[in-house]
Image (tube, rainbow, N blue to C red; front, top):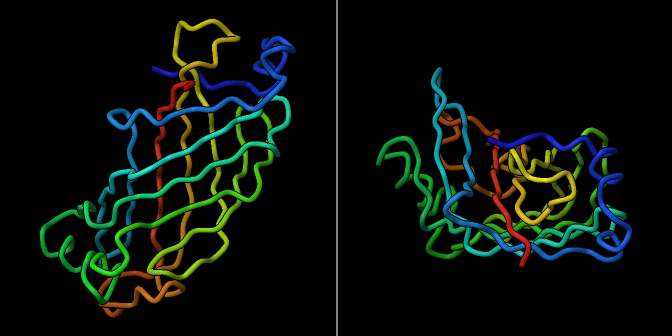
Length: 189
């Protein structure tokens, strides 16, 4: 289980040497997942996508200097049932054959206190790039020392409207908003 980092405590606990530069992290794929949900009539459909690549750099002394670059594999996406998976990957929605990746590149990170931050950036879906924001929370492993930032979990939440990216298939059945929940287990690398 993870313990939520209080931003003030985390920064106070880290030595000034540890804060001198951004720290590079690598994704732990087995402990990470990108999940999504959308409305399908009165029901909520949920699914997941595997992470293809992730590059993360966190500067605990200057969060604005932190960077996130992540891509997920559309062709490996799974929805709640086979028809939904096929429809989502097909040309009327995500068009996995022509656009196999969804990418997000951060343009800014702003701490909001109590181990939380807002991450803004650009997301590219179906070749269309739009600005997007995620709410982020950072955790460290239970039982680890207060200054041990070698293994962390970042939880990101956000939402996008699929119509803004041309993913308009079955709009009479499926809702426009897609809610995202990303759990990224990372290790200093």
